[in-house]
Image (tube, rainbow, N blue to C red; front, side, top):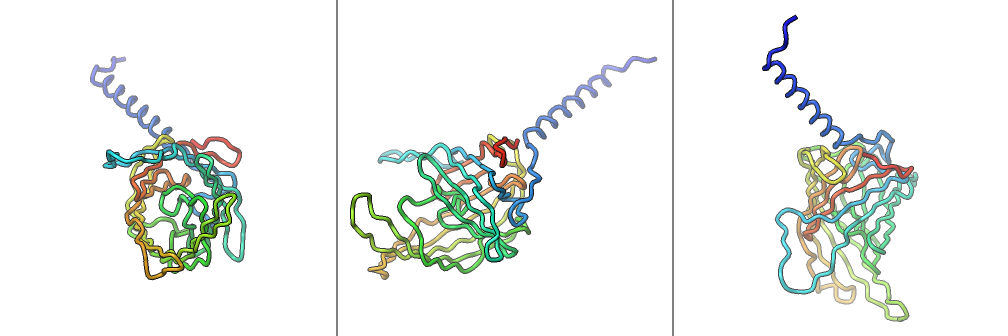
Length: 269
């Protein structure tokens, strides 16, 4: 029997190394959950007990500007699915969204037409959930926010106009009543081509969604004096079976997925 040549041995070694690297990459990509989620959505799998934790990250091209006092951005944001229930022909998804000691309960709704997300949810535009001491009333929404079971199709665009009254709670131990404010927001999304995204949780094939936000507000007592809201674009990346894995918002903040846990509290790798 002839002995393998040095070239053959070298080729075998290269092949073995390639298989090893591929296995490591596949392991880092992780396994996707097979549990059925609300409205059969794969890009945002909402199942009772599922929990995502995101860590602050500085988006590319964003630099701290010198001068002035700045509030520290929270290191972690956590989103947990508290319940998934059928309500009036749709599915109501109740989330507990939190950072530091701020806990906000939000209710998302999905049906065959799509998914709607409240203004104070992390999933609206990748911004910190909740506006401390504020709530919305008389919400009027015209248009679409996100697709549902159909998923994220490259090139698709969705547009929605939102009008609402903003109510600010009085400070503790005071009887001061704050006037309501009128809020108008325009939101449009553009769905891009899937790409590999690496975060602490792993490497994911994710679909980027650009979210453009504009709007204005005015006190109910002086409706003619409208103040423009900060305009800008956010980029959100969604991975099938995992959910939102990265968010760069219009305020220059970034969040990346660190842990994803199932309903039993076990890590989904």
